[in-house]
Amino acid sequence: MNRRDFLHAAASGAAALASARTNAADTRAARKWTAAIIGHTGRGNYGHNLDLIFADVPGVEVVAVADPDPKGRAAAKQRCKARRDYADYHEMLEKERPQLVSIAPRWTDQHHAMVNAALAIGAHVYCEKPFTQTLAEADDLLAMAASGGRVIAVAHQGRLAPNTLLLKRRLAEGFIGELLEIRVHGKQDRRAGGEDMMVLATHQFDLVRFFAGDPLWCMARVLQGGREITRADVHPATENIGPIAGDEIEAMFALPRGVNVHYTSRARNAKSAGPWGMELIGSEGRVRVLNDVWIDALVWRGGPFTASGQTGEWIRLEMGAARSATEKGFPAANRRVVDDWLAAIEEHREPACSGLAAMKSLEMIHGVFAAGLSRGRVEFPLKNRQHPLA
Image (tube, rainbow, N blue to C red):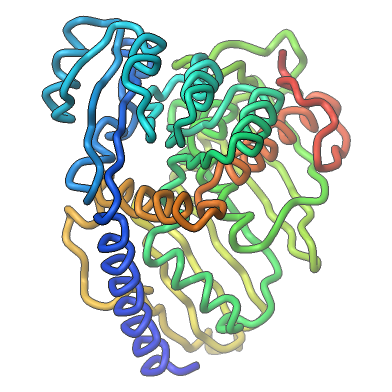
């Protein structure tokens, strides 16, 4: 595919996506949904704007918000324009019986209980990531949702970013040839190692699976202060997202069709690696993906290296015209996930950003910790559904 064909395909994809979103909104407007929001000021708050995910969504009315902190609850009620507010989310769910519930706290220590309570009254759930603290908790919620015909979506917004969807299609068309390898690195800041992976790799591993499938096995070297970790190195993260270990991580996953995935998080690597992201390497080209709520991607289309260098060009992957800062922000990103979530409810299917996908992303993270502790290879799916560092 030449540059002209590539850019034409991008513009066509943008038009198709816009048309699909308009049709979906028209369909949902015909049905009235009641929604509620659960947050906890001081213990995970409202995540990345998860108190605002229903703003201006056709057919959705926010009936209530719950937060045990009076000041935080009052502010959230005003932000999301809820009719009523409650200190206890159990009381809110029982009295309001909403059809849709946003589980907003960033901290994961209450996710299982909150999602469980929402599913118990028959609500569909949108949950902040990471989904749960353990795989056992995730398994329990997924089974509960399936038995009740409820739909869980998790805030892995990058999966539905326009450039992600375009990149997925272009990969399937072979525009970088056969996919051979994916190299992933975190922000590698003060949280480098276990916390960087726990906070951000949940997004990144979700994209790895989206592009290349489920891992078969994992090996990892996890260091703390220059030595291999032991259970004595396990400690809480800055926020309550479960136990972590290690300030340097190097991991490798084996995926189907010979694809290898390398994950790195080490502060010493941050300067040379640049912004957090990943690189997809194919037999005929490569793509540099800059991870964030809005995915940016640069595609290298060039020939092989010779004595005089390498010829080629970087092509920025864009869905049509340049996007505004508003279109690239969290409200718009959450809206894309909400649109698909509501369509999935109507169509009786799994959403793109499903609870199952979120569990599998968490499983890859736990696989790294398990491999680092054992200093061996771990197979997927993991047999231990509790936290490997517990």
